[in-house]
Length: 510
Image (cartoon, rainbow, N blue to C red; front, top):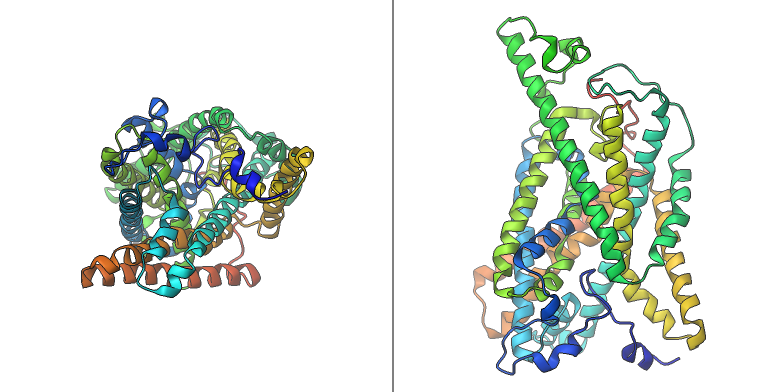
């Protein structure tokens, strides 16, 4: 079959989960004003500022958030939060650059909407280099490649996350109690290797990605949002409660006052020896430089929401408010990242694991938190999978007879899910999977490409030398993080300097 059918039928290239198959820019070209106004398609279905804010928050909160306490450990209790703040500011600035360049080409080319790949392609066409102009179409291919790697990388992380959390819940099921304040050592009942859990989830995830309608997937997105929100609230409540308890105990010790009554937090909690409570003053302010690249990979993995920025802005009723929503939303996200990363590391110290859910106590309340968050991640898998599927599947479907389209479609989806499962099995450490995906692909999309895009777009129109230097520094930062973070993550996989943490994480005070 020719590729002409690919352009004429339902298969289109989407760069975000927020564009549905029923909507396309071509359907609203007639609504676009020739005066260059930046209107959006599908006004009847456009989102309000509050809905856009919720989508922005959801797109930046996932498994990366739960891995930030370990990231702070890899950077230091002082360096970690400061680095998260700087990285958040830089990431938001790069998102703003992408939106500005997209607006520029919409006005210049009289288009209602351009996605990330189109923006990079048009930016190369506007560059002063004739070689870049002749190879501008590679801009879209590069963006599509990193989008595929990033989204499939997310799916690999989800496999490891699901396996680790379900394995821990099942192995501790026989000794799980209703007492969340116990510090008794829990002897886990061995079941099977975490990689076998990944294989157990494989057929269910294959069936899930067979759902190709984005509107149906939005139902699962709602379920994921609710379960993950409840889980995050419970995790914050647990950490803050324990930190308050620790503060009271240390104040009691410092003033030589007897411990407070048992009724405050439960008799079994208060009966634990005070010296077993971790002392935050012993945590290093700045960690070893050898582990900092792992911090970079995890942090940029968490901040990589740039692929959804343009589609969200495109769907707004009043896109002029998007810049304000972007800055407010990312300020909330950055504050959430810094708080959970810092508080989680303060609470669990050197025992912190690849996901903070693995450090929750062994009681049914917090075991249910692990299961709730895992359910949310399970349904989110299909949403993350949608982007690479819409790029890869049409390539194969357009080359087969029409009666074989459905078979090829489902076969390619099955192979892609199996690929993510195999990669997760090969790298079963959650922290290294997150760091590797963040270093390889997220740094390119979030830090390297946007500043270079701004230079290519505006250089011929005149740019301030300070702006050029700023963009060059951001791209160099992203490239150094890309190279060093990838090398350190791969080295840790080959010759791990520290063995993975397999402590009894179900005890809050052990």
